[in-house]
Image: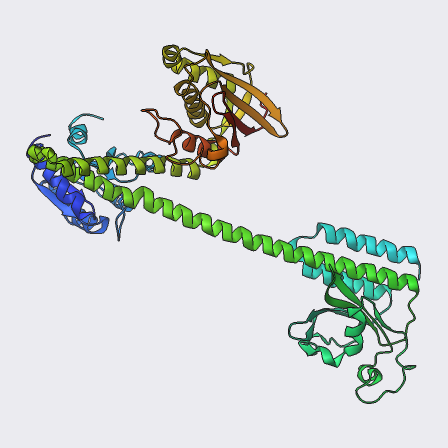
Length: 130
Length: 413
């Protein structure tokens, strides 16, 4: 991953967000990180910025269980948008239910389904082709 | 009246009562009141229930012949004192029968004649409905247009009808009770699933946060690892993650749907497990014998069955005895509707008198062994039960153990 790539974390778990940012910093990853606390806030942003290429991140780290709008609903809404730039979604979740993993495969925009915790090794997955 | 005709009618009613659906019981009772009422040429047929706690009685079912006014709405929560003659007879298990109201003695305004005459009742019979010595109520027939003399046989057959009514209502009550138990169970199941979700997701997310924080700490401040408390914190966090992982595994087993069941070749599954464990068995000097016949088919989840045999055979190898030539023997028995898969060893054995309750419990271990974590048999039991089976064990310290897996018998050709 280039150091300049923009990352968007959508997760209501404050601790995860802080620690994830820190781990990315230690690993030399991008420090351009946008945070949204739920799918609703995030999709509002994406709707408003769909055609502004420079405002679209390269990667989305998406949680599944969130208030107001969960990760699944966010994905459905996101797929409807005509984004000016291709974005890759990585699901980061506490769920280890194989059903969730299967469901995530139905979304072509989802690159990988990764179980929390986030570790250095898992960060590397993001730069490797799936 | 022909005795056999009435018997035939009763037989017909009995048959409908046996097959009736719970939600149709009420309409079937009304229907049979009509049939019986018309048959004995009564003008009104009815069922009353007694409430001895409150000393009341209420009309619960009624049929009226043409031109006869229904009384059911006027006959709710009557005090029993208003019909003492009925109640007294019924308490003794006898029908209350008045062949002719006209010929009753005139016994004053509170008397029987004074009750019945204003209703134009010329004859009447009410028969107690009794279940296991409990008087539940009565079924009755009023004759308004003409008085009617019932024969002994007719009274006997009407009593039989009363018993049938008792049975069908009792069955309805029992089914309602059963349904309510069922819904309680389903409700509790839902609660458990909800709890399982909290466990598998919410607790896990906290636990992963802790382990993430700890790994960051040890990256940024490696010198902290010198401190015993930090090391202990790391261990505690790892154990927490491991426990949650185990519990999650069990939750997944218990919430997975039976659609994943498929016919499995038992011989192939066991052969596969034995091949995988060959090296471990040779190392410990344990001989594994597979006596499962070729082409034995069971219905189940392949990954479960594989894990079950891996677990049981591994246990047989792990807990072998140094004092004799060790074996693990796998064979098949049939018992009633079950196929019984037996995994027998001549290893250390378990003191079942002390440990029978615990043996399939979580984190229970019975021998000092570096690899004993107390998770295998717990998972095994859950996997077997998820496939509709059960597990049992026979064991003797110093002799060995036989684990018996009962799986529902399914034949696929």
